[in-house]
Structure formats: structure tokens, C-alpha cells
Length: 64
Image 1: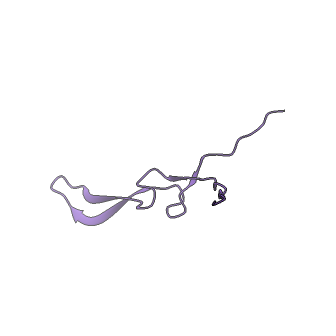
Image 2: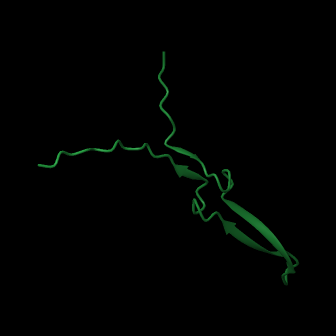
């Protein structure tokens, strides 16, 4: 039976996987189209995913 490995990325919690949005600001340009702002997610920088990290166990050392 096949073993599945966990994904190393998950959808961004801020943008939920929709990292870039286009916002029409209402201004008409000379050619008749609307001016658009492209806004990217600040947390994932437009990738739509964040890396999952596996917590590393704390190493205790003996002091002499």
C-alpha cells in the first residue's frame, strides 16, 4: 500500500491560497479601461502557501 508523505506547504492562513487580488479603483484610463491595483499578500509574498515546519526536539546538554 502506498505511503503518503505530509505536504511541506499549506495554504496561507491570511489569504487562504488567493495571494494576489485585483482591485478596480474606478478611475477610467484614456483607452476606456479601469485602473487596477494588484495587491499581494504580505504574509506569503504572493505565493499562496506557507511552509510547514516540524518542531525540532530540544537538546539538553550536560554541563560539567
